[in-house]
Length: 302
Image 1 (cartoon, helix red, strand yellow):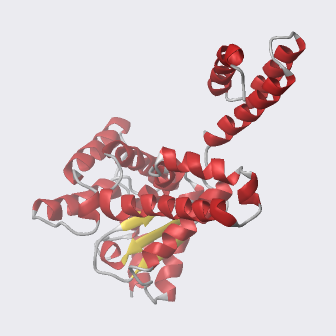
Image 2 (tube, rainbow, N blue to C red):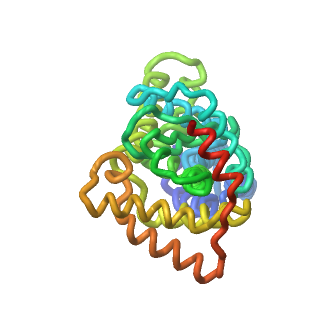
């Protein structure tokens, strides 16, 4: 244990570690402290270990960790909804989705992007961490053309790009996850530490699922996803108005009292419509019509 007379130096070095994001800084400082006689060898080693643990506890989720988290979230959602059995339509949605993903701020993820349709009349779209995106049949049939389908997918891909799902995990829970992952007991794959890690992972999955199906994202996160979606649509030559046009339909249903699916987790549709139209007007983006894409959409829906 670090002695009381070295605690002030320890706190100072740890503060610099957090400030500059470098545990190595603390290790160097601890070594210098030992060499100059301010720290004993035991104190120096203890401080270095503490710095490493602190750096681990505040590190962000890795791409691989996000991938496995997203798979678990997707599996939980599929325990509630079944997939639509329509290979042709699913392939079409994936083709549009992959193009959207490549034009996004995060074109590649550890496991890649995957798009699927949930067989329910409930209107919703859900982005799992890492790139798995679900679109419900009820959400899809509200779209009039490929432009509006692209707008829906661009919004969800933007949530993946922004890592909004990951951000919904309680920070204290994630700190415990990475601390447990770094422990010697966890590396032995057994005992109480492994049971604790499993419980923490399940809690992290539930945090994300609850956000997707119950709480919803913050209005700031939704606005940011809308803005990102507009840029993606514009970049690919899609009609930017497709996003507010689609949201307008949802706003109309919301005004009539719709309260299931997306209406539970996405309040304030009208405000999103107005802000999207304002962005389009400020950039003077014109409306775009594309008859071949319209026909492709109709053919795919059968």
